[in-house]
Image (cartoon, rainbow, N blue to C red; front, side, top):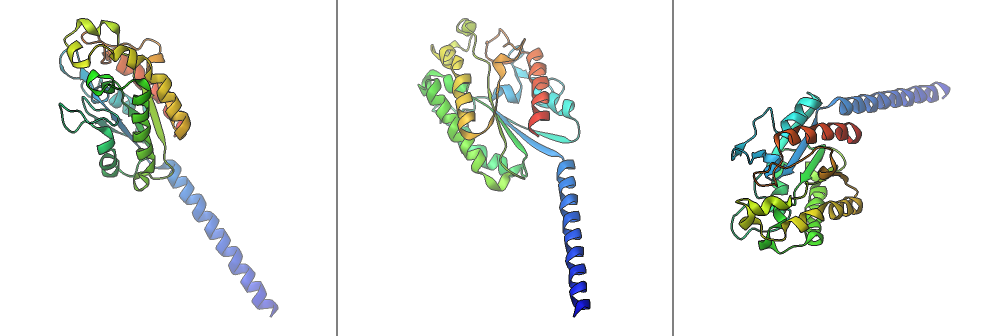
Length: 245
């Protein structure tokens, strides 16, 4: 009887040892696994260059600079589309509602460790007739859907909301004035506060891109990041990534 009890205890100890080793091994594998980061945004994520009317190249866009800064332990996925909104259907152009495409975007790139959302500038257009508060509500719907897309996450949902820099008043002197309307500056100035409130409610990370020292928009339309600002944003996000991943 004593031998059987002893053998049972040995088996239990061996099982616990194997289980703890497996848990430790899994934890180490998880820690060392490449982190997948989806960058979901509009033309400032796509890399629109308002100076040339083209696109910044792979050595200039903030997404690619972030990849370079972080190295091979991270994989940056670009999902930027010019004209994209948080949750508004554009009556002029199709396929621009972020809420409608976030699910397939996430599922096509799973497993994800972080989703970065930088939207809101296009939502300030007059044709949507949405103030900063309503735009914030649109972002909240999008962020909640991002969180709730459980099958795309490797672990727990992890979302970073970025408020874009506000539109400069001199946009009214450029060719885009008619596209944006008269109230976009005022609306864009209120986005950082509303987006921060959304981040607090949904327990997301938050960054106000407009508060990054030196960041600016090109004067050709006053709403797209300059070449230097792409680098500044990438450098700031590099520091943020080290804290949240």
